[in-house]
Amino acid sequence: MKLILTESQYKLLEAIIQEATKPFSTKIEKGGFIQVKYMLGNIEKSNIFEIVEIYGTGQYVGAVSNGEQYIINIGGSLDIIDNSFTVLKDGQYKDEGNGPEIVGGIKQKRKNVTSINVSDVSKNVVDTILTDLGEENDESKKTTDEKLKKRREWEKNVQNKLDADEREIYDMVMNNPRLKKAMYHQPKLLGGLINFGKAKGIGPAKALLNKYVGGYDSDKKDNEKSFGEFKVNKSILFQIERRAIDMSYGNIRFNLQVGNQYEGRYRGNQYFTGKDKVSGMNYKVHLKEKLDDDIYKGTIKVYFKEKNKSQVYDRMDSIIISIKDYVL
Image 1 (spheres, rainbow, N blue to C red):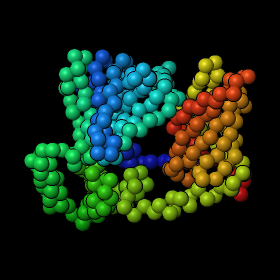
Image 2: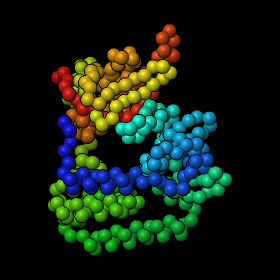
Image 3: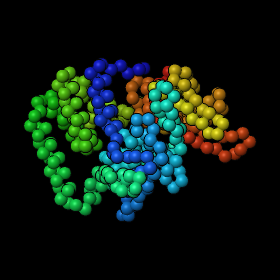
Image 4: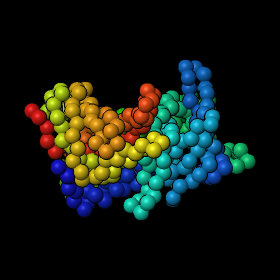
């Protein structure tokens, strides 16, 4: 099934996506550097990426670190709240007329990130971004106190302006620790939700919070049960949604097209496996999240093996699929 949104819902979600994908820095340039600082136990370490290419409008950049090739999403690699930085090793940037996309590669996530230093070609630091962990570890107590004071003032000002319906949306946000931190960093999101709730009533705004952002009353157990309709070792028929899956290794190419129907076999624990009839390559899909009835978001891992060789190489990508049929 496909999700149908009203124009107002679409505009609100579009605004949220645009706000959330703003670049963590506007000072990144070709030939410059991104230094990712992180904690390993009680010791601070760092990774340095040299920017060797800027793709398209600049949302994605190519980088090199320790001789390895990476793609960095300037609007999505850094999670300030989760204190993490994610890059794609050996991915490919493509823009062949249908819009830019990143294919293949292996995601690598650095946890316990404290800060990002952006440097120019002369290695001068031109921008510094702190994560939540970085703020907590900030040696300047005065700076931390000032930020805490601003947060409390922001909360007080917002609370004084809310009516009953708006307060219910506000409470949903503030009862979710992750959402609460997100609103501090991106206060426009709360304004959009409150205005939407005021114009359309509390129901649609609550539904959007619960469905798309993860409201405080979302039931994890129900989400886990949503995968229970599949039986182990039974067939699943599915289609690729939104964008095709296209990976390659050497002369071997793996491709799953949007709209075509494919068959897999459910293995339990939210995994199913399949085999591409064209390339002969095996693959495994991990269903991580149920977006709507029969619509799932997850990852696909493809196993490339050359003829007469025992070595197997894998590539991973994100995937959205719709389940068309399954054996009960």
